[in-house]
Image (tube, rainbow, N blue to C red; front, side, top):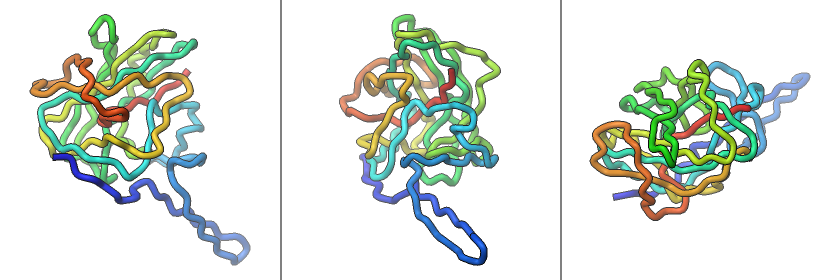
Length: 208
């Protein structure tokens, strides 16, 4: 059964020292600031945008053997997928590996995929662990719909829905959530499970 999570996971504490004067400014990751990944780089320094972003509180779901994600439509300009990610609710590493992929909505065929490993090896950014897929050189075509999906072998890593402060990249439009039970792996799914924002689950870093 889903449970509510009211922990403010996306709080970042910045320290500054200026001529002996120490200032401490609390900010939130979903505000208009640059968020560092685990290598100290900033997302906007690469001109990348996350497909979706949100903040706590949200509702958690810990089901197993399902694929979850969302359908989206690319705007008037073609996009490239720089990275694929999976939600890390506690920001302390994933309990198991998660295959993540993008499928064509009409074709139901896989466009690209990768596995986000267990643990903390994958880069962490704004609630998600990402792996680089830029080497696959996949282009998402303008005015075309796709489905981002992630597979959960077990319920060790929860996903979020009914999220707060939900926002979408300027380069795409969010259509709906999708999911399928008893998936057995990363497979195509396009059934709407009836919540406006969710399931996250998977995410993408986009570039153009």
